[in-house]
Image 1 (cartoon, rainbow, N blue to C red):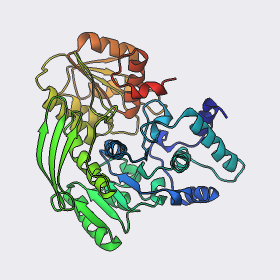
Image 2: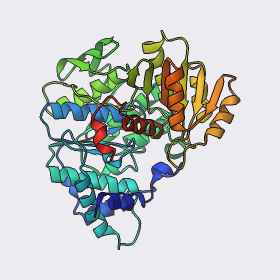
Image 3: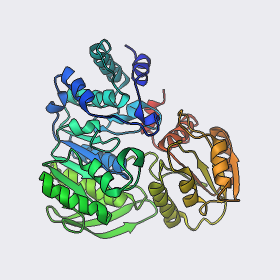
Image 4: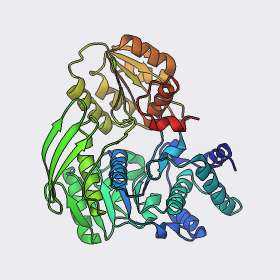
Length: 434
């Protein structure tokens, strides 16, 4: 089976990421799927599961970077991807190859295609990552949980360490409308292990405390087990000093801007130390579409924020780092239909002078016409709708501060355009474009 055929096979499966407000009803299907492959998840060494509402992806990538810099052969499974599904599965400093991807998809489909029942896109991808890490003999593996935790495929992967990033409101129709309910959903599967968490909303903290008592969870939490002593945010990087109960003082250098990365870096460093590393080396860190500065003149930022919580954070970061740019601020915005679009636009309305609405290349992306209609109800500012290439060209010729956001899909569409035009600053993703 060649790579294109393997992709088509995978994409033919039910994909809840592209179906608004839908998700799995149980884990029985995935458990049965694992059983057909003799439960390969049981053979993995030192898996870490990362859950939460905000910061899962960056925490996962930072932990993977630290482990690989410490000469651990670590695996990384994340979601979603920007433009190539191979981005979701990474071995020791390299994405899964087309050959390995196609070979493992063929192996999986040979066993399941004539069986009763159905498999989902995320189930097969999770299994593929497990089989790939087993093949590569990785000695540590990081799995970013998908939706929630109770019904997420990663719940069936044995792990002694979980990381819970900041919990907030997202996917409320599936996870529930209350923070306590959402927190419980994300904690399910964390029984009898060590869980690392930053300071959380009081309602989240209440659930954490009681869950830990009921389910024999050792908590490593901010303000009791670790304290951030100093944070220095510079125009090119961040410096942190952290005092920890278990490892003493740690000094962390983050070679990227973004205050929101600070706590996630601390979580990833503590996770790495629990796995046996001696330091927290983040050199070579690459975080595409996470408050990523692409150009300096004009300033061009690409960010995958896709809900009010993450967009509030984006707004705060923009004012902190680029508040000195007062004019010609342009937002290129696209969002999927099941998100809170009006609230998201209200958050950003005062930050930009011109709004350009586009459609990302996924079926559930909201039409620019509808986005424009929603925006005109809340603002009289200049608003346009354009194709993606035209929008980028217009912004580069007219803006001083340009931000592209609204979804990870939108970010991926524009990063692909930048790569194809040799304007993207990092080389790692170029290998995935063909």
